[in-house]
Length: 271
Image (cartoon, rainbow, N blue to C red; front, side, top):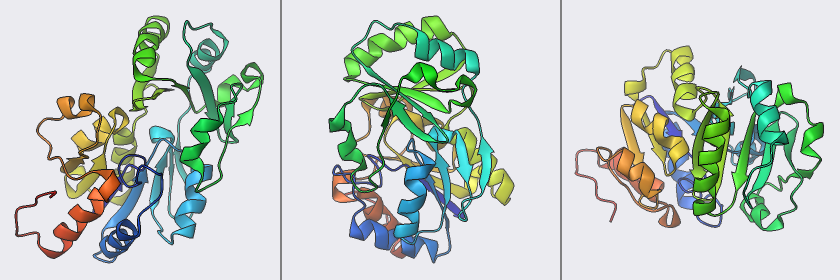
């Protein structure tokens, strides 16, 4: 195995959005094996890069659900944005929903909805949204947009978005309460395919871990994909052939990595 790709929320991070000490030790042991680390997340590069530096985990970073790829030194390797007409439609349309709309570009995270409860997930980094009239943002620089609400509300909104956008954007759930609008063909799997080609590594030589629908293409594309026990049921249903490991609450990735590093000849059990 030459590369391991990890989703963050619901996978590496515990429910309190912290990286557990055992997980950190396991990642460092894996890096020393040596296996190339890659973090693949919906979070912004501006949030992730300082965290990786603080944890002393030099790694490739796929951020914005595959819309950006950076190397361990912070150099941008790939960027994709929403088509301006898609960004305009998402931002300027009236959607029949109670969901809050959030827009991202290279300068940060923007919304006109003050929803402080969602900042709990960003306590570790202190990264937060900027309250802005979204209609003033440059439409040709929008990386992605997302809607935040409960799952059933977002399922209804997804129907509206699909009818309005057709095949001009990629829609997926990055969590049960977060529906993403991404550039067409932008996802973690496509980004990882680009990265491995650049590194001269085959996808068959990679392992990946995830819990939500934004991890689907990545988990299905690598040689060894692993689904978290706490994963969305929709993801488990789409990938019934992949093994399910432990829960993020009990640092399930660390448990698996310790097994893989020390007793790979034994059958793995998440218990």
